[in-house]
Image: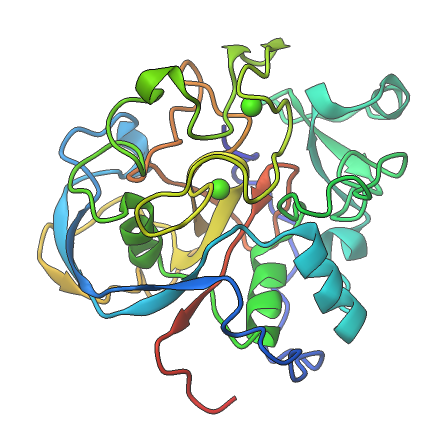
Length: 316
Ligand SMILES: [Ca+2]
Ligand SMILES: [Ca+2]
């Protein structure tokens, strides 16, 4: 399901000329990335499941080769960045972030009197941040290999820049998700559970009241859980939503495109892949063509990212 859409911190986005960008640790650039060979693919779909999200039309897109992180950026990865740079995330600066009600303790819930009208299961929690995903009484100590959460688009850009990388474009992300398969729903094909096996961390049961965690995880899973797709990429759909570099728009030209970077301006950024909160009845967005959006300063307990990189990185 989507994190609350349309929430705006009502502050100017941080300048991207970030003073904390320093030289990353040796080897960060190449670690846990795979080379995605350039080619042409069908982006979007002629059979949109969620019309208003702009999943269609299907269009042919050519991409050059690039590198993609195999995994969502983990808490461990993000801690290395913070330790090296002293970076403070936007959620930490603002003092709160959005958390799914089902993950909160009664003590934290009792303190909150504000909710998102259209999605009352999202609550703004004081002190929620990447270090404290469910508020101050929670910790990531047992989840260092899980995706980092509560990172805004601006935070994600800062991390990728520090690592000598960048966010993927939406086209690169979707091409990576598809793993060389044409017009399939999921990174592994069209069946959600081939041979009865779970291939992604989503929601089983009734949303939002009953999460049976049949796939093994009620919240996030380790970034290396579940089988990778044919490109060797893990958790492209499900687990945590992933920011891309594109501005959000729902109308796309059907024309063939080369290395598209999305609209030149906008108010929201595109996120892809859905999360552990997605259920077909409410948020059938754990598909490669699916998409959603948030303002660049938004953060939530189901939204993370991974980085991409050019094949021949230029001078830093
Ligand atoms: Ca699950
Ligand atoms: Ca994901």
